[in-house]
Length: 273
Image 1 (cartoon, rainbow, N blue to C red):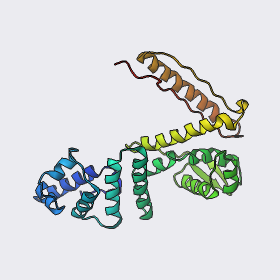
Image 2: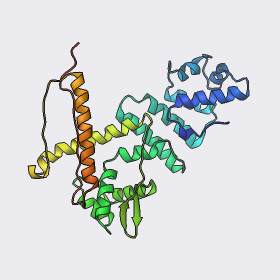
Image 3: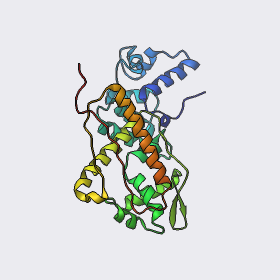
Image 4: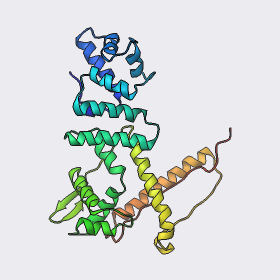
């Protein structure tokens, strides 16, 4: 059977558990032996770590990595997994996962949900995916200049290459067309990428209040007192509305501008205790 490549893991505890199970399957390996190899005096410490009852420090990650016979980029990847799993903020978690992505990219291996994370954590990709096909023959600098928010030609070029690679765009001559490919992530890291996107788009929405005249943007709001049941009904209405708007965009005869629609419904008061 053997172990899966380390880049197929995002949880260092799962990797440690699989390593233990595999060693146990073919030998008399024990938690005591595992802990001793990593330099820990407690025979059950690593078992408690795998059960989520304790955690590794970064120094402990180095020792456990050696006990796992990891070296080079695999050891660095393991340490980044430890940092990722114990990150207390989205920013720290995003930074650790990006480190895992970079290690995988440098060593020409894929990481689970890596492409989906990369797509959703940046506002550039969805904008360029809509804009590039509408600007036939345009250079990356031309596309960058059409964006309302600052982005470099190099970033646009990188975005185009990435989306061609994952099947979101197809290059035809010196132009691009949208392809049928899609990126979809299911792991615990995806909400981190999506929250990053939502924060950026919310900031863009705030900028738009002063950047564009009312004829080019639409802002409206409603403050209301509702029940939990009403909230669920409103979510259904918002989803139906979003799908209807998506169909209008899908059947559009052309792209004159790229717009972003934020559907935001959030509490202004705490629940009654």
